[in-house]
Image (cartoon, rainbow, N blue to C red; front, side, top):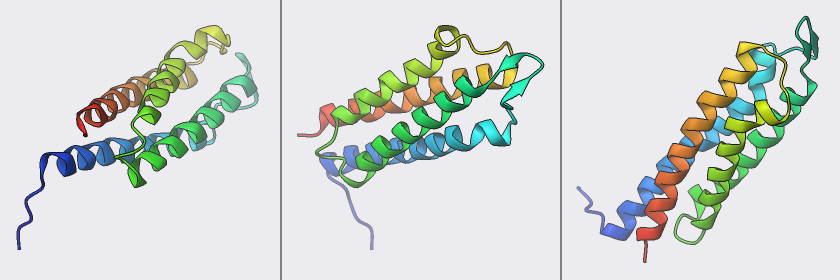
Length: 130
């Protein structure tokens, strides 16, 4: 039996999918320092700031996105916070003076761009939900 979604339901579903991917990206940020072996102290300097930033921002993104998945019609503003967190991922290597290693830097840039894109999409869908 096919089910036809009305416009509000479709927008909520799109926001859920976008936020669902952001949950996965948040989880990735939590484990990335250990999977990619950022290391605590390496030949390029102290990585503890990069590790802490990745884990803390990952938790925040995953929690906010999870709330959006379960209550997409009521929590649109949370996507705007995830946009800010994604932008933070893009600039934090410069602000926090990450050691010049490609892994931490590129992980933040790539994940940050995806988080921002998905959060903008999710926020845009929320704006259309009446």
